[in-house]
Length: 262
Image 1 (cartoon, rainbow, N blue to C red):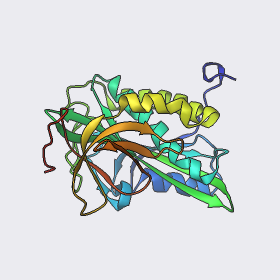
Image 2: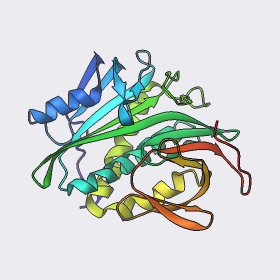
Image 3: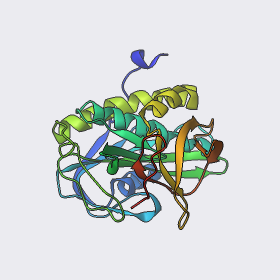
């Protein structure tokens, strides 16, 4: 069955909250109690939203999208990482539909580059629970700044409106739901090959890269994604595959123009 002919499934049950600690936590609680595939939790405000490595992500009420969904995919646990990349494509597509030239930073950030400076507009946090050798459920959380950018520890931030885009929070949510359902369907049916070309087209191609705490910045050029979703970059002409660690973008540079990370 093609994605175009399939009945909508994402968000058929949607729980809308005024405030919560974290939509991912709420979705995980529902999933542990049997919530169906496609259940969505949204909130006007998160008191303790978080990103990768426990980073705090906070924003004033109604100024961002805080959105998490429960998935029960027939995937091996290792394949859950691809859901993050599929969600990134969907989030970037939704932001671009609002008039912002957003791009992707591996593995889970939506960013905007202005005069070479990278600012974070949104991110994805995917958390999974396994039973034996199979996934029991996955929670995919997406945060997007709509009107004003929150203060995020250790990161420059921006929002759709601050980057010159348009659209209300409700319009962004509607675009996100449609894009996410489409890209999740593609990934679940066809794997990484279905999303890799679009992800690569949306990603920053040349930048300064730091992998791991305390590592020196290196000028790297995007090569692509491996079959398992790992990042492949060329550094000094040698292709390197990155499967773990923190990848940090500094200034996006022209060829041959290396600027130190701030």
